[in-house]
Image (cartoon, rainbow, N blue to C red; front, side, top):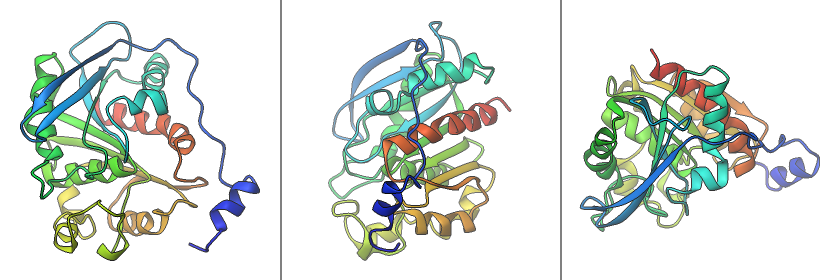
Length: 261
């Protein structure tokens, strides 16, 4: 990316409008916490329903970005109102489930013993099943660090268990030397959890990937999209909550459509 281009485009109004949160009543939100053996800590979680009636619904896991937690999807993106508005407009109903994955561990096993991916598959999904959600097949959604985590989970678990993976501005790098400090335990960890070259592992999973053209991850995302058949595209936008709010309705529509098949 040309240095200063993103700022210039922002000043010129070329990065697109920030998304807005619908002015609708949100559905029911049920929250709690549990002691995670996989993460070696207490994690918080929330289930977001499309209306006020808890029901036996399909579910999509929601993976937050760096520095976030299970509250970020509601507080930063208004995902509870976004889901309510989409289902009210005719989207097949499904639930969303958010959980604390760690502020900066990038949703993969770390040398510290913190394993957020094992927490998702072996602890959180069983908890969701106990709440009546359908977990034999599920979707996953994430942004930034969580966008990477969503694609990694889909590639590791694979179809048919993971039906659909939706990623906004996924944190993708081609080389270990370019990664953010703390995102991996070193070059070997980076290579072990690389997404490039894994198109075969995502076969059968419906994938949607979107990224702003002025996002620092734009070039790597374009390369990933060239490898993996995916809906979505490269739009005007930055690596911001405003961009993710703008794209979220399309990602919820994608997930609802795929989970209803």
